[in-house]
Image (spheres, helix red, strand yellow):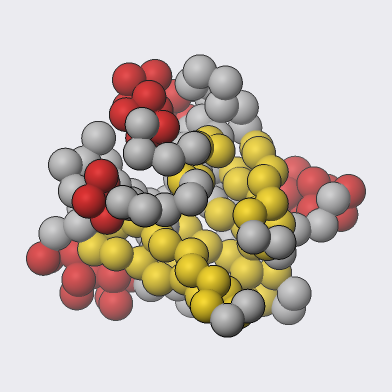
Length: 161
């Protein structure tokens, strides 16, 4: 677990993890901060503790669909499209690419926090925070190191370009 996570997530109500957890011990460390809804990623063999390939949770009235793999938010693959058709969501939180994403497409909000794990390439090491102020939701990325501040801007929403 990244050493800054406890500080950055202090006071949050819930944590969503979009996969590549890295093991049950990491999941337990994150769960010690706040309740967790997690999906397993490919490095987890798509299984880590109770984490399966997709999860749903409603927090503060916002319906989250969490999945690991979503190649392109503007063209969700058949698995994700079918899941959203069967049970709509407001936000799709995804991982896998380790690229930060924060984009609304139609009625759906697509969010990838990037990765709080080991640095990959020139990608940012970051997490995301959803906040509701006066009934309105916003989300932001939090860089976990200084180099990631610029990388967030460079790599943001790259999957839609």
